[in-house]
Image 1 (cartoon, rainbow, N blue to C red):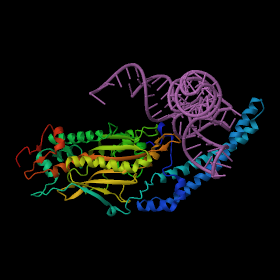
Image 2 (image 1 turned 30 degrees about the horizontal axis):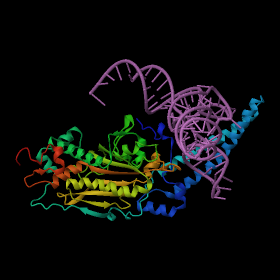
Image 3 (image 1 turned 90 degrees about the vertical axis):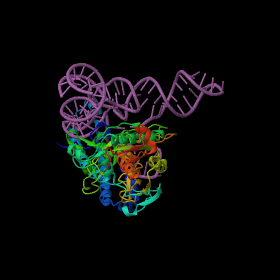
Image 4 (image 1 turned 180 degrees about the vertical axis):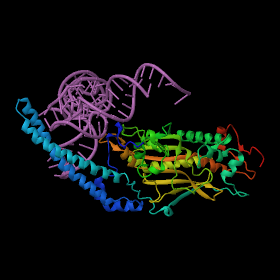
Length: 443
RNA sequence: GGAGAGAUGGCAGAGUGGUCGAAUGCGUCUGACUCGAAAUCAGAUUUACGAGCAAUCGUAACGGGGGUUCGAAUCCCUCUCUCUCCGCCA
């Protein structure tokens, strides 16, 4: 069973440059530095070389095509006049074959060019700190970590003791890095999902239900492929991929479309499970709900006008923060450095929630401005008032929030000495008025 | 899963091998008429890439890919999607 090659469906007629080749040509040094900052291994010289060759080939092929088109027209006239065209035909056959050969060559160069293009990350915004993970910048801390009069337990201990969390039985069903929630644990998960969606929709995000199985093009458009193909679960037989985040589905809803005047911004929120192979992370976060093959997430997504995207990132991040604030969970906002930001984004803020058992902050949301990166890959444009040419939209995404990690953060931050867990105020109406989770059996 | 029909510009809808980037209608925009509007009349109205300071010019595109041909929206193969009927099913 082999994968269908990408770009074979009817929607995929439009192919836009990932980066404007002219811009790259004229700002080579700048692009080189940006790629270096992102720890990109892309060979820009090869990119430029292929771009040059493609252009040269196209120019000479176009000249020949123009000649052939002219000749064809004359041929048509001659035939109408009833003249013999056999000799003429022979000559054109030669030219036609020559063109076919050149087109083949162009196709090959084009493919190499595109292969490289797809590996180029989005270039970081000027406000992004330069460097690797160590250069990440804490922007603000919100909420005081609670002082416990006892040694706070990790969530997996609390959850199992409460009889609401299990890994062993889930491992029997699937394997490592899967979990199951029982009773009030499952209800708490659902309460969180509902709370998050309600909070988001109140802010103008439209609630969505979207596919979890997507095709190659969707993964490529959002920037997952080709670079992170080994991180995706694949349904080979049917050429589907399981989404690692519903960002993929939301981003692709409008692939190949042009938004009419006045229809931006578009704001969506969707709840889906997320599936990740976590290849190469063996041994990391092996305990608990932190790193799993399947977890739930509420995702926010926006399509906006280019000049508004940086402000929208601040707003989107604020929307995610609001959920943490309402839940009373201490967190901090971190601006990711050039080498740590996501592939598709120019700037990413991570929200990190306080985990008492680990005595540290852990990622619970990631908010990114992808500018026109995804829009170019997916051909998504919009028309302005006074309508000149359609322009590429900017896209943003952010978790609002990762549900599993919120679930565990609540257990850890709201635990009491006896192993019970207080339900945050805002969730109680979603929990049928329940205010505290108590162990089934006294500990 | 089986049988059939279809995919053309913003929309509707012609076009079955040769000035077809594509008739016609609708929509939209501009101009004329009008005090203004409606109606009417005239004109304009796709996108991508390349060349050029620019006007402009060239090339490509009629769901995607491939083939036949000097020449393809039109013929052939293939894939995808949509619709109808049957079967199955939450």
